[in-house]
Image 1 (cartoon, rainbow, N blue to C red):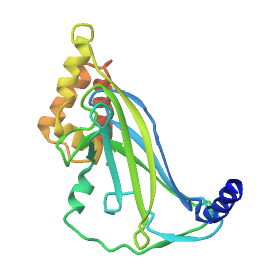
Image 2 (cartoon, rainbow, N blue to C red):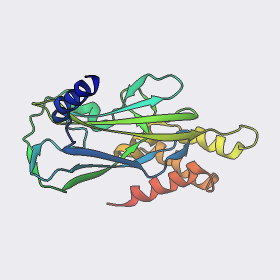
Image 3 (tube, rainbow, N blue to C red):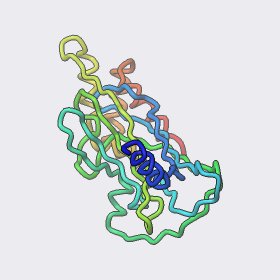
Length: 221
């Protein structure tokens, strides 16, 4: 009798199992970094079904339904991430029109996480393990969400053993530099001077190399 009941329950429950139609894929290009170092994430949303799907497949801060939370393993409290666009768009309620994604089609972007404009601090501001949670509400009417979690390991420096790195870190830890690197903000003369000093005095450090990269980007039209 119990076996018949178990079989009946299985038959009843099976139709409730639903395969995902849309999946979110996230991969950090640098999953192990040092404190205050940026992480670039390759983010993609894909139609993994065999039919056309209509929805909001927007992987940018302009859409409130795309969210990123930062969770440091040792405290477990999520910290909602905002870059400059996300922060600015919180004041607006933009109406987006759904688009149709064909089977196998995907939309992909690269996202830089360095400085949280919402909490006014560097994202990876202390050594430890971090979980980055990405959510896309692609069907607001049915409240259907695609999720993806990734891990990032952040390493610190020993003040005595890594003196040059820690000195370079102090120069790099500037919100104006972070805004330029992450959000493309314009560099002031004082910030440019700080970057040049960092690149010239500490060229072999993690942060000196980042400064050189940002200075090269600033030269482009």
